[in-house]
Image 1 (spheres, rainbow, N blue to C red):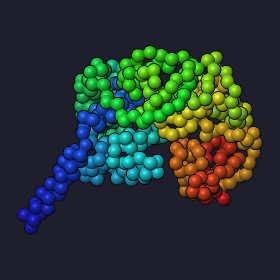
Image 2 (image 1 turned 135 degrees about the vertical axis):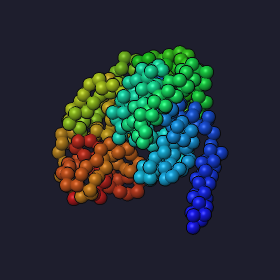
Image 3 (image 1 turned 30 degrees about the horizontal axis):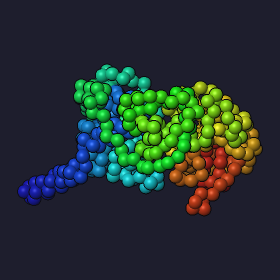
Image 4 (image 1 turned 60 degrees about the vertical axis):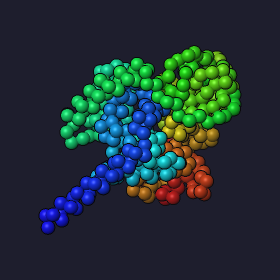
Length: 385
């Protein structure tokens, strides 16, 4: 009986090892490492120290292997079963492959923005030096990965972040490989007051020049949220509009009305940007440009300056005044999305029994009805009574 039990355990161990070997053989940890660094510093806007802190944790979790399953845990960050199911569902819903680095980093970005805002804010605030890399690895280990021996693992990962990864990437000797380019052809206009031109598609590349607001540029390729210019160099697509932009900041545009009780005006499109002002429910605002952030959320540039989330704007003045029809939430938890459709980001959740005011309705591509809340965001009408 003991021999049989030992045989079973040996077979299980071999199968686990086979899973790890197969996953490792199918991927290049070195290439994955560079892709992760590019995403953390480019799409998420983290500095090198913060990126290295996260990467040190990934290194000790999976050695930068994405499609890997060990003892019920899966992926770059070794998600437990429930989170793995969420990863797979979210990627399928948003058109990503959950077995790839790209798909998993997109999901990770979404989770950080939606569930770990405090941690993300702390990571964005670390000093860009060796100590900052150590601190980033330490806090990420304790607050996100949460291993059994937290003190030991946090110290080990912190030392790897500041002693190995940070010197490697801060020196610029291992500049990340650029992701594939997609050929395009259009004229864009700079919306930032000063926009850096870099040698490659990401903040990990050196600055080779700058462009002022309103400058017209010819875009010949795009890669991972960056635009390649015909004149040479790369700029962030976040600050390129297809509509002409006046250098003074003034421009004609479309009028919208604020539906949120108080809507933050930010310096750039994205919740990670600084709050520079506020507009209030019912206020009329003039939108001169739109842009999409890394999460797929649409942001509107105001003629008066700054950016606001389009989820809280309506073309109907009645929508801004708070008038509409009252409904009650029937689902146990109803997601509030940035737009009408399940492909839009979840920005809030409403418990069963909540009374809401619907100021506008719309149908998605599948014919499902969605209602716009007076407080901002959209919910499925199927779960309202």
